Image (cartoon, rainbow, N blue to C red; front, side):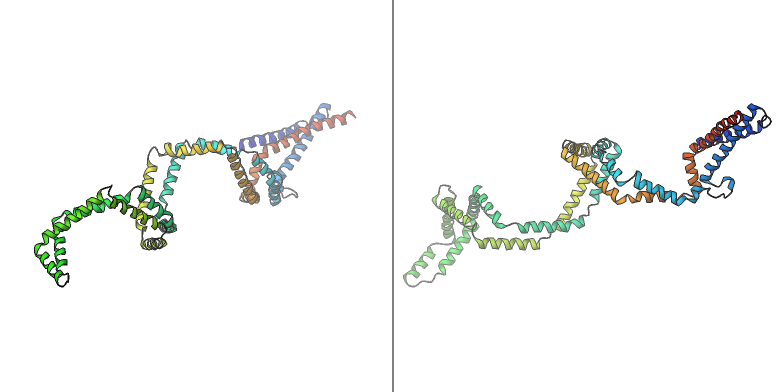
Amino acid sequence: MLKQKNKSQHLATISLAIMGIGFVVTIPLQHSFLGSILQGGFEAGLVGGLADWFAVTALFRHPLGVPIPHTALLPKNRKRIIAGIISMLENDWLTKESIRKKIDTIPFATKLFTVINQQIRTTVVQTYLLNLIKGLIQKVEIAKITPMIEKELKSRLNEWDIKDYLPLLIDQVTNRKYDEKTLDFILNEIDEWAKKDSTKYKLGGMAVEAVENIKADGFMQFALKSFSNLVNEEKLGNIIQNLILKGVASYQDPYNQNRQNLLIHIHKKLESIKSDEKIYEELTNFKAQILFKWEPSEKISNLLTEIKQKLISFVDEPTFMDNYVLPFVFNRLDDFQSNPEKVHSIENWIKQQLSSFVDQNHAKIGKLVQENLDRLDNKTLINMVENNVGKDLQWIRVNGAVCGFLIGLILVGIRAFF
């Protein structure tokens, strides 16, 4: 740009010098017809070139440094010119309406999907995404969310109504025959306990002690003493042990009527629990007490810490990007692009946000231009204008000299003709 300015300045100076030299050279020839015409042309070209040089120079500075009135127009009218530029930008060239119309013509959603589809495949973007995901995981403050989870967990458990779950539990006990299994377990435990020698002697001792402690008169007292003399702890223990074992064996028989009656009784009791409000009240109070005393914060914190570390390790795996992130992004892009309503919705949202941004910041365009121009001193501003339009301004000087020369030839020719 600077070279072009220098070339145009040299060309304008050369044209002015040619007119001046031509005028001086033709002075001795002014008495001849051709000489007088040429001198008139060079004279007019010199005057036109000087006049245009004065006019062009007066736009930017005082000609020859002389403070002639109505010169150095740009420095003197700087504020008014800047205000005019800002007004023209805001009210003519970059109005809110024109910007909105331009925004409406741009398919932002399509361009956005294209950019995402292209950039997501680059190593830089993938590395950034992985770092972003790990950074988000690492910034999770477990100490802050642990009380929230504990509170929510207790609240949800407290909201559970026992009436919704106890009947289901009882039905499962019946369907899975846990009542029979429980009865068999108890019978087996009794059977094993009754078979022990220690149990036999213990039962015999208890029986002898009970017989001796029975209070009776007359014949009954005589009979009890005779009976106690005939038996001892071992004999009584054997009798009681055999009775217990036979009883247990009878209840272990699935076809035994006593067993069937006992199970029917158990089933009825279990069914009656479903409508027993006292049991529900007791279980509800029991649940509330347990939840009140329950302090799971440490376990929750340890669990969250473990999950956090596992997530970070999972993200660091080489296959995480290809197996999870990229498929997720591409699936979402395909989902959006295949749904015109979603694309239209995103398009409208982007345009609404941009339009809102334009409405809120339109005045800042002028302020930005003014701030940038105010930072420039007069010399820098003049050089900037001259660098951009100086070529055309210098051609005004050239055209002035050439046009003056031609007009001078015509005028002198007309004068010589008459």
